[in-house]
Image 1 (tube, helix red, strand yellow):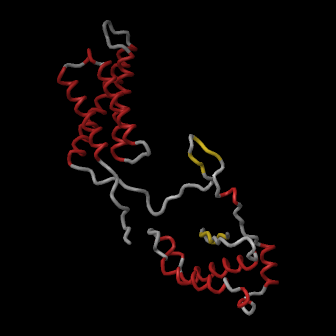
Image 2 (spheres, rainbow, N blue to C red; image 1 turned 30 degrees about the vertical axis):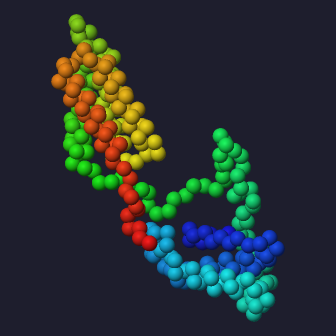
Image 3 (tube, rainbow, N blue to C red; image 1 turned 135 degrees about the vertical axis):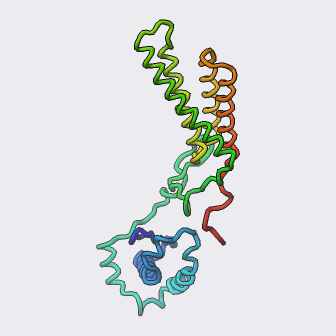
Length: 246
């Protein structure tokens, strides 16, 4: 395996295949690829099959290197061995790709998880989602304002004034609502589960602040929490990656 310009060239051979010829194959493959594709095209590549036509070049080189007796005229083993000494390729061992242990009956691999193309995107926000966002932003502003006012009044030792715990709960409720909006706009690994946790936290905040609001206010806060949660649950990932065609 060799790496040039951020591109990794990897070859898998039989155990008895000469290392010098494998390195020569990678070296020729690298030169053909660099000559065929400009750096700007490499940067703009988004699809996994963007360089599918290069498979023809790989096939021709494989045919040539599968018959080492025909390579005497094009491969200089002395120069190859010298270059191998100066720039040795990275060799993958069996332990790099085989399962190393088992966790809960499942094998864990050494190979890192990699994605192809841009990360998945959520579907376009519906009009009901934007209405839920507008309502949530209004309640977040109100929650921070009431929380700061409650903390300020509690520090003045006003008789029968608000408790500092109420001010903290107002702010916590607003922060949980911010977390709901984050889950609505961005995709996370456990997005649905986190949205349910945020909804439960909102219900607990409403219960704790029950004596400080009337029924209509509680209804507005509950509807806002529930609508944001439902919009998050029903806003799924796009069916396919953008700019991806086969």
